[in-house]
Image (cartoon, rainbow, N blue to C red):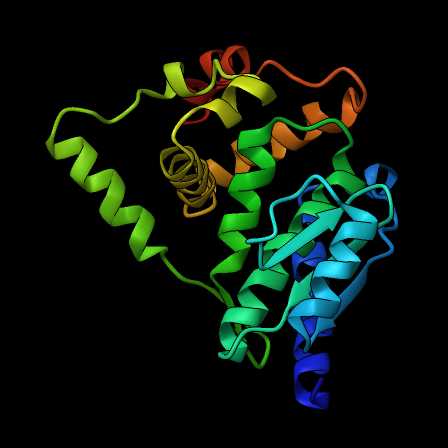
Length: 217
């Protein structure tokens, strides 16, 4: 792939780690080794996918393996799209490396959030996912918007059984909302502390937000 794309991939993935690690204390940090594979040939990408993740659909444009610390991307006709997919998949590996057993809404929300990232000099800019915003706005107007209590009740399997556009959009909206204010970032720090404290057992997100959301607002 072009040198400038290699450079941007390196910068973007390091920035994702930098942002997330900023929420953790030094003793909570872990080194995350990440390999990013970008394929110019769809057939090579499919063969690699069959080796690493044979159960995945052949329609995916990218995937990740937290056990192998790798991300694989099928290069798109638009390089910005390729980079967005790479940021999304890389965020999954970084989140897994830092936090261990994590709720699906959190890893997908963080991945969707960083998918919208762009870097200009020392400035990190996180854009709004217009498609997800449009979907959630339409659901709100129709009185069909899922409550946060209902959303957080889903475990990993039941999360995947729901309408995926709604689940991804809601995950993105929660992370984007919390990362957009000082109070929200304080809550994210508390949440990440809780994740790190119990890497194996996971966390009851609904109980956490019921206890702490109003306390920091």
